[in-house]
Length: 293
Image (cartoon, rainbow, N blue to C red):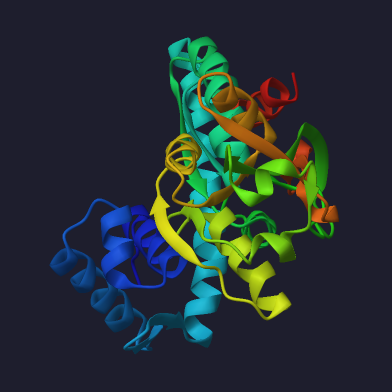
């Protein structure tokens, strides 16, 4: 049985993404090459590693065992590269950072710019996920560092405070909600909404909140950024739910009303999570320190 690091990374990527096609793209491999590698791994082992269906792939018992060892070996390989880079006179490597929508759009651009400027040989693989997904992925060793909403249960992960923000409603001047100073999310659902694209973690979060209230979101338009949401709201197409930092910035140049959300979940304490700070590679540990600063 002989698997190389490319095989192991591909296998992890396939299971992280839930399909061979998406895993191949993440590993920067052609689909045919990725499929051949997976088949060769199964042939070498003499057992199936994946259960294939129309909805994607899931690991078999053998696949789950391989995934566990693959993550460990890839982590050790990354640590080896980092340790050896010290002999080249510079710290180098990659850290995988998982963040929810709020952290990714409002706080990380400036924070990461500072870190990357100070570490020109280090790259950051940044991925947007829901907070509860991030907790699971960090616990499994899929990511090095995560940033989640402070309300999520983090189990045994180590945590550090990051930032605080609040979700608010933005509406055009003259909209019925524009005369309010505070509103519950359940009331917002009576109106047309402007939201983010379906894959955005915040949009999935709001959809879940609406589902629990038994009311579907009346989404008129779905866009890629909070700023675009605010511009569409200003045009009178609907109302939006955005971070307070976004709303304050947009209100300086747009004719918008900003209304507080009364729901407890609207206040967002953002938290940094890691499996164990002592086990982080030096550049990942430095990223945590940079984010905390």
